[in-house]
Image (cartoon, rainbow, N blue to C red; front, side, top):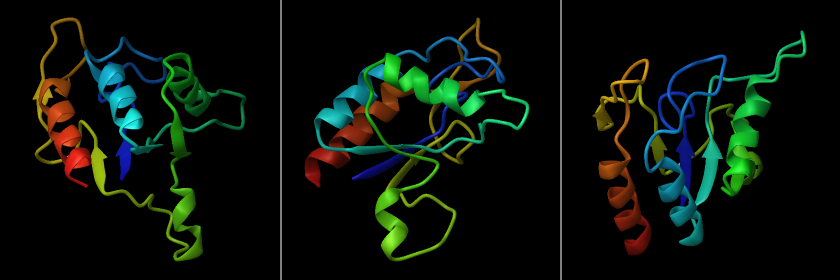
Length: 130
């Protein structure tokens, strides 16, 4: 199963251009999903710019440091054979800005973030039934 995951406000506190504090349980759940066979795609607005700022690289390195294997970054490599669309194909999209995504409010965070206590088990159930 392909799971597209946003970064700021989803995996870390929204502190762009910096990498914010970890959203509780995000790393644990993503590691678990990869163990269950999920293919994670980082699907973020971050990019590296011409002036040498590596905002996207910072996000990718966050996953590497936390031992979370990414299948793709802002694209799904498996879709190249059947579409030229720039939208990464996924079966689940997790994003703090997505309508209906459960959010939680953490006092020290800039704004609400994904509530992994709800998202984690729900996605795991989908993975186990697939």
